[in-house]
Image (cartoon, rainbow, N blue to C red; front, side, top):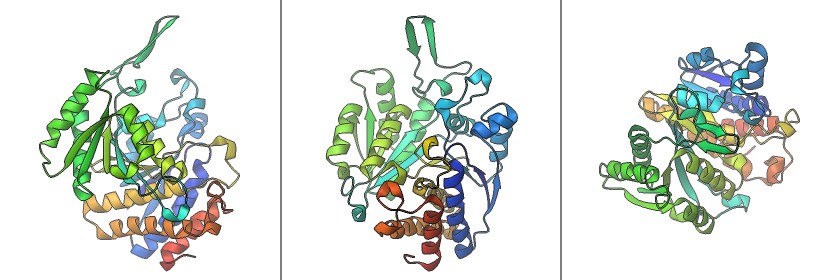
Length: 359
């Protein structure tokens, strides 16, 4: 099984290396025969090729079984006309990775964050309020005069229905409860349209309970009692914000795994939820948990899609190994009160995976 690794900017190379050490251990234990190729994105690509993301890189990524996408310093990139392309958007739109799956769960042994939380946010990732992915030509953000700034939102029936369907399919494997998040009391046309399409798809899944919550109320409800939610589905912008909130409530944004997927075309990309943290790059102190868990999700997803039990087992074993390591306060990275560096944390998880117990 071939995986392409795109380390990205800032701490990307460090957390990617830690993740590969874990995947290597999983490959050996479960006889997955994983192989890894590397390519450049972000500033390395800009320096070599004049753009942060080449079309050739996207085309190459299509030929792999899975993608590991490191974080990017998008805010520091030059203008688009100078080569500063949004890498995440490039992959999500270019490979049609419309489902950004972001789980968040509490870990009692961490003694931080919310209690009894186990939810998944299903984020539509190819359109919405994001101006770099909602126009055929140009971008959906502009200034008609020097003192007026406008932004265009795009919602399509196809995108709304397929992310809703992905949410209901996932809920059927969990607690059979979907919550649609919107602001249809103000965005009457667009959010009303989204809600209409979710309700339409719900008719295909009568076993699943559907409710809906306004986005502002949802932020409060997540803080007050996240245990009441199972699968949350929403448009791009709302889901982006809520998933960061949920991850921090789970204990830390550094614990948040994530994949971008398209089940119909069999494509999946592992990507940490957090950013590139250039202020700590090269210091071996970054927490690689998010990317490790994202890679575990990728294996689990591939195993389910391709009906390969060893891939599913490997993904679940990595997830469990991370928990076993984190359960020991001495085996945590600095952001969680421990003293381990990026590399050593990856090695501890790989060891726990190999031995089946805490190192």
